[in-house]
Image 1 (cartoon, helix red, strand yellow):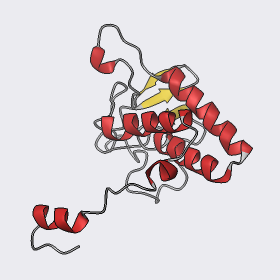
Image 2 (spheres, rainbow, N blue to C red):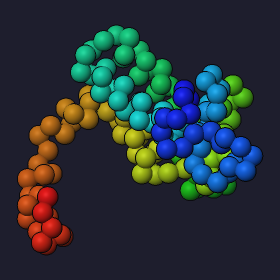
Image 3 (cartoon, rainbow, N blue to C red):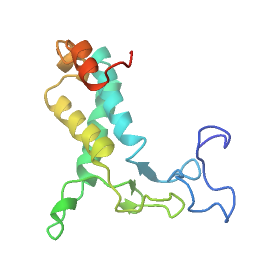
Length: 160
C-alpha cells in the first residue's frame, strides 16, 4: 500500500518476482481484503488499548465492530479439528471467503499462525469481554522481577 519504496516487501514488480518473497495480500489500495497476519490482528489489539485508555465512544464502537467481524470470519470445521476455530492468513470481505495471494510466498489461503494471528485476536476478545486493556490486566505483573537471575542462567556472560 502506498509508495513501493516503503518497507522490505511490496507487491511484485514483475512476473519474474511473483511468488518469490513475502508480498502484501492487498496489492492496490481499496482491495477488499483483511490481512489477518500483519494488520487486522494487531490493529484489533491496539484499538482496544486506545478505546480502554480514552473511553472514546468512536474507538469503543470500532472495537465492537472489529470484534464482530473477527468472530464472524473465524473458521469452523468438522473435518479438520486443527483448523476449527482459527483465523486464516487473510479474508476477502467482498466475496466472504478466506483469501491467499500466490504472490505471497509461503502464505496460502489456508495459512494460519498461532503466535501472531490467533493469540492477538483471542487475547483481544478476552480483554474486550472483561472490559479492560492488556496494560491494565498486566500492570501489576511481576514477570520481570527476576530478569537478572533468569538472564544469568540462560545467557551467562552476555550483558543486557
